[in-house]
Amino acid sequence: MKWAILSDVHANAKALRAVLAEVRADGCGKILCLGDVVGYGPSPAEAVALVRENCDATILGNHDAAVAGRMWTDDFIDRANDSASSHRQQLDKGAVAWLKALPLVHEESGFACAHGDFAQPERFNYVSDAEDAVASWNARSEQLLFVGHTHNALIHVVGASGTPHRMVPQDFAIEEGKRYIVNPGSVGWPRDGSHRASWATYDDAKRVVSFHSLDLDALPPEDVTGGSPRGSRRSAGVIMALAIVLAAGVGAFFAFSGRSPNAPDDTAEAVAPVAGTKPWGAVVRTEKRSVPANAKKFSMSVQLAKKSPKAFVRVVFMNANGEDMAAGEKWWQDVAKSRKGSFPVPDGATAARVEVCEPRAGEPAPVVSKLEIGRK
Image 1: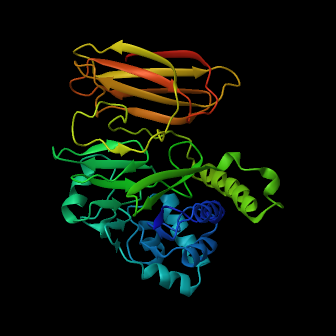
Image 2 (image 1 turned 135 degrees about the vertical axis):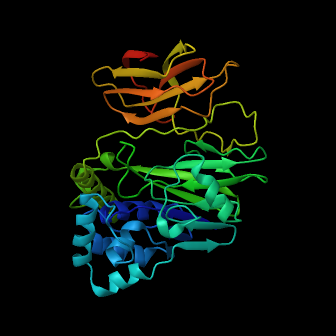
């Protein structure tokens, strides 16, 4: 059976409609939601109704718990606190009762799901860095775990060495002797600057996890008031996604760190990728610099030419053997005009490079007018 794994809808009902249409077209037999159905977005009642109607199981998220009165919101930022109060007023008693009854963990044959970590699921701790994954693996026996909460798609993997690694999302096959934690990203509120709703699927017969995304900005505007039902749902998702981004002020980019899928598999912790599923396309331009022994920070700057297609930008550190390092990697999706950043130099780094790539394989190549990397 193929499972669809969704998370962090955040009351973006129209983005959810578009994703559900894709999920059904993909032949998924069951749909699981990892929580945060509500919070922030404009359509809490519709989002709850859609999840209840379409998802076979749903996990409690921290925003769901706040709206249902299952947790204090003293540590919420003002915007989150205000939306929890507003959404509670917009939901009927049945919807609030449904949220209140949601479980913290859901188990299936061979895998389990939670919103945050599994060690203390009621505390909704983030599983962001590689070290964060260890507590969840210690708390559960399943080989495959799914979590949400960060709004960023990623993979954590551990093998024979016992050292966890964080990786960029890529389709992969489950291997014996390794354990995985997978975050499918966010349906309703992407935090990587891409405006792409994202989710994952798991084919338990083939034992393959795949990542999927939907470009909300690219959906046809003419389908807002007409066209096929599937197209109408998609274009509506654009409006809601942009509304959430603008209202929440999500204009910043969110950097990831983790092992490069192109690094040599010199340990047991690399995933076994499905052919042709890199999350970016061919490298268009690269710049490399040596790292002085006393360097603490490096910076980079990328400028695209006017009317250039978007780019996928990576920064990777290398060790004395010329191998890509697990620590320190940063990447940004769908860079439209320019990107600047500074980042700490990981221990053992002797060189660093920045790559400008096609945003996805086969898409138009970006045109670079400026590319720099060096000691800050």
